[in-house]
Length: 329
Image (cartoon, rainbow, N blue to C red; front, side):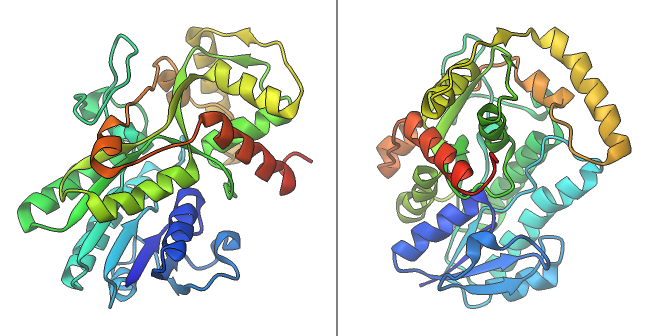
C-alpha cells in the first residue's frame, strides 16, 4: 500500500511518516527543492521533489498512490507576504486533493488544525462542534487553515471525495528541526529567555500520539468528519514550570498583561520588516494569548480509539531532543 506524505521533512509530517513505516506502508514523500531534509535522511522511502504551488509536481507525486496524508502547511505566526501562505495552505491544498482524486487515491487524510475551531468563553474545552467564523480568527495562519478546511469540506460534498479531516492541537516532541513556534518556547525556556509569561493556555500532545491518530483516522474515520487530536490542557505557566523541572532549573517569572505586550510586539514587527527576520513576538500571537486554547479529544477517543500520553512526557522528549541536537548550546 503506497502512501504519499506531504510535509514529511517537517515536524508533524515526519512523525506521520515514521508511523506509516512502522505499519508497513510503502512511503513516498514530496519535498521542495533545496529544503531541509534531515528528518528524511537514511530512511526506506521514495523522495520526489515538488511544491504545493506547482500543480504539475503534485500530479506526478500522487500517481500510483493509494493514500494521501496531507500534513504540510506554511506554519508561521508572522509572514512578510501573506499571499504566499494562502497560496500554500489554501490553493495548494485544493490542487493536491483534486490531483489525488483524479489519480484514483482511495483515502485521504487532511491535517487541519484546532486553529479552525472556536473557543468557549468560560474556558472549558472546545470540541469539533464549537462554532467559529473567519471574522473571529486571529492571524493569517489560522485564517488560511480555516479557509483551507472549508475548501476541503466543499470538495468532499461536491465531488464525494474520500477525505477525513484531523485537527491536531499543539504537538510537542522530537524532530522539531526548524523549530516550530511552540518548539521555540521550549528552547527559549531552556536558554533562560522566558522571564515572563501571559495568562494563556494550550492543549499539548506528544507529536507521535498525534501522528498515530492520523493512522487511526485513516483506518476508522468517517469521510467528511473531523477529529481533534489533542492531549492535556495546560496554562503557559504550567508548561514553563514543567520544562524548568525537567531542566532542573527553577525560575521565578512575572505575569505580564496582554495590554503591555501588544506594543512591544508591534515594535518587534516593525523591526522585522527592516531585518526580514521573524520577530520573537507578534501582535497576532499576543492577541491569541488572551484566550485559553483548550480542546477536547473525546470524539477521537470514542470513534477512533485515540489515546495520548501525559503532556509531561511530550515536553520531556522535546527537551531531551533539543539538548541532544545542539539547540541549547
